[in-house]
Length: 154
Image 1 (cartoon, rainbow, N blue to C red):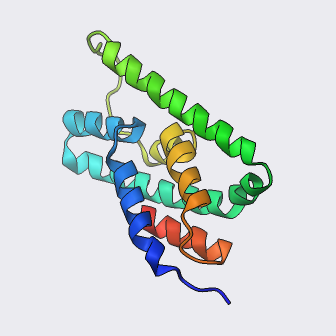
Image 2 (cartoon, helix red, strand yellow):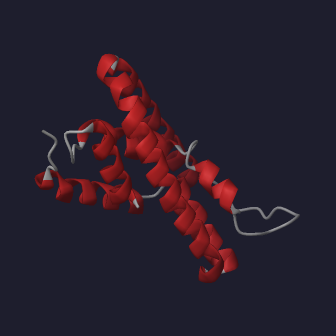
Image 3 (cartoon, one colour):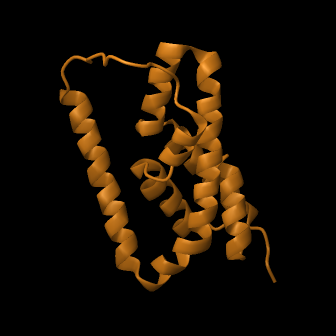
């Protein structure tokens, strides 16, 4: 019988909140957008990130969890790669010189650009969603667990 595991919900919510507010590509782009275009033009970008994370969480929870159960070394490899990449981004941010302005069109990110970015974002994909899909179990059914985690990330 499938049951909801309410005792895991606080851990899931805390994990989603903590990983959502830590530095990463999405937060950096939102900061830049807010500074350059204001809150009104940045809110749609924020909403797209939430929708993209929910869909990514659902897809990973339904598909990749089974792959990682059969081949645990792939999960470890992806986790390691994501940590190395975040350390690289941290190093580059800390040692970068002045910011240079590019010539050309300046505009907030479009819906499809922000949505597509979630699928290549190493922090969102590798660290947040993969870790949640393989360690946090809100329901005994894989389908419902993935749906619940998608709601938590939203």
